[in-house]
Length: 522
Image (cartoon, rainbow, N blue to C red):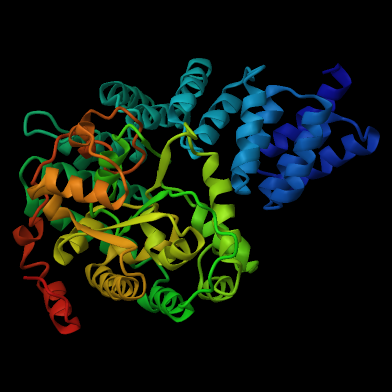
């Protein structure tokens, strides 16, 4: 970059760093007015546009910057915008190009790591996070991303060391405390309860208090203080629930739209591929079954994909701001089911490692889309995990899902979760009736009690021969990017079966709600 260009680019970069996107856009526009083929000008203009919410325009300008000057920084940011635009294949291709001459700055290396992580390739992400930390060791975000990747890859000791190092720079970082608590089951002689209590006491920020509250509750449960744990959890969730503009009627409308959309039209030229879908309420054993199946030599896990919701959204063509809503479901119900199936497979392809293997999509929320799956992919196998209703409510209440996702707003109140479960149960009854034989329902408790027998049932449903490796799922070294990462690296255990009974008094309103709704909790 010449000195003249540097003097022009520096103010625009400074404005971006300060969050003044309007000023950055104005300065970058002046650069382009002077020279329409100024790669730096296109790069900065594209970043300003994307930060102002105009992702499509940002992609156009960053693409032009890469064409004019294919340097690593430009490619890293282009890949980030492409993944935001749900163009996973283009993002993956851009990353491959960036690897030819990786950027030298920490932000770009961290950005590449984040895009790899979004694609489910945590092994590829790790090296970029390590390099970002090497270049800028005091950046807590880079250290947190590194620890997260190590955790997903099963390297808990290294993740713990990375988080402790982070906390020396930022002792009140709630994300780090929350992840640290989840790395393993804490022991009475080795835990962070006192430190978490002190940190929580001195924290005012609502989101940080939520993360710290969950972390403290989890560790109290681990060390044998379940009543205190639930008390902390109830307080954290009640405070957060009061900040949400949520009413269960919103979720009820989604369930109603899915039920009203059936029957769906037959598919024309439906794909013959036979992916495996694992569905169910969250925290009911979906990750466990994913690990059992992906331990089979003919199967791989593609993780929790958004490929089916996005394929349905595209087929609907609705302009609503959410991927799933009543209008989208109703409109997509009149679309070409075969096209939805083909679009799903195209989107899923970018998350697969070995195309010769059958693959699993273990996004639990696909229970909303079971009808679309059955019609769009006639050969697909669908597995639904079930768990005792009371334990399902408690496990959803105890797990902190993506805080910014409105789809999980139901999970901060016990009775909201119970209402959600009732509608889930009713929807599964519909699928059982209209899709006989297409969905196998497995009970988590049965897997724990009879691992071999239920594994055989599972493999038979999927058309797979027996494989002893499926019984040793805990030895599977593939990455796990869900809250169950630590648990599924242990052999089958029964600690979580009937957990709700320890808290029967607190859960009594839930039991009565289920009784009135006709849900068996015996």
